[in-house]
Each structure stands twice: as C-alpha cells, then as structure tokens.
Image 1 (cartoon, helix red, strand yellow):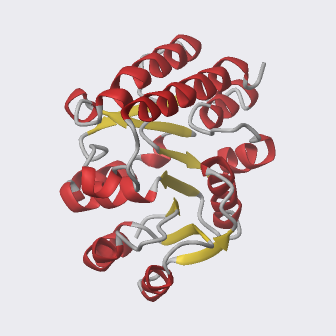
Image 2 (cartoon, rainbow, N blue to C red):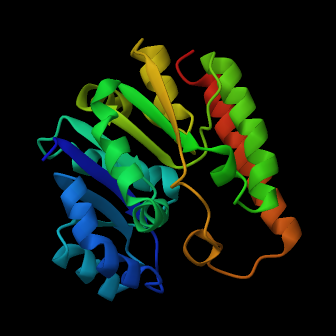
Length: 240
C-alpha cells in the first residue's frame, strides 16, 4: 500500500452518484491509503452514510463554493499522517475510476515523483466536454501555461502533491478559485518544480459531470467565461 491519501469535495443534494460510490468503493480503497472528503450540508444523507460505510473520512461543511470546500478538504486531510495526496473533484474521480481504473492507479503511484503534479486531460478527453467549457478553458490554459512556462491543462480538477506542498498551500490559499492558485503557490512561493501529466480518465460524462439543473445556453457560457477570468487572474497574480 502506498502512502497517498485521496482528497475530494462534493455537493450532491440528490445523491445522484450513490450507485457509482457503491460500485467503486473497493477500487478506491485499494488505490488509496486514506480517503478524505468534504461534503456540503445539503448533500443527500444516504450518500454521506454510504461514503462513511465505505471507508471515507467525511466532514460536513456549509455550502460556500468550490474553493472553500477544497481548502476545508485539504485541512481535513492534513490531520492525517500521509505524506502525499491526490486531489480530485469527486465526480471526476468517479468517472476516472469507472472507465480507466488502471490509469488512475498508475497515476496515483507516480505522485511522489514531484512536489506538485498538475493532472490534465489528453486532447481526446478535453474534447469530450461541452463546447462552452472547451472554448473558455483553452483561454485559461493558455494564460496559465504562459505564466508557468510550460504547456498544461490546469482546469481538469485534479492534482497531486507532497505534504510540504499541502502545508504551504493551506497557509496561503485565499482566492475565489484554486485551480491555478494552488500550483502557483508551490511554484512561486515555494520555489518548487511543477510536474504535469495528461490522462484519459478526466473525460466528461453528462450523467456524472453535467449540470445539476436546467440552464439557458447564454447562462452556461457566461458562467464559464466568469470562471475563465477568475482562474486566469489567479494564475497571473498568485505569489507575485
């Protein structure tokens, strides 16, 4: 067993992922030494109980946005003893473990090779996403890549890092979104090297990763443009 803990966040008021949790719990417990997840207080209680029954350390938090949930999850994981961590948005993790189990396992094993590893998508996986995601995330990724000095996909919702990096991030993270902020904290403040790996498993599946309510097309585009601006601003400003 490796010394790598899983860190996740979820907001799932309808418990739509409960069947995947039941299906994949054994796989996940075989890959990770420990599993930590923050769940919103609005999350389905049956899902919360399923997570606990299947080995997750669960912390229930107020619904205050993704960045707050990620920071709380990181602090929660740091109460454990693990020296390395894999962060992944929970819906992303379920998609990955369901379709590309071996790739996930091999990717996790490689996490200790770097202080921080950005986990992005292959071209195929990237292009499975809705058009408003693809077109706006191209801009975000371009801006971040220019700031970092290497071409990466920063908007896939997953990364790996050491305990030292986790502590540095926890002490410095404050932005509205963490996608670009966390690696830039390690890169600019910690002066550490950033690794990168593109994977197939971070693909998009509408039934797992899609919108939880009906949204007008214009609202979808505006929401993604707003995220593009927030994450890109973080890439430029963090640690300067």
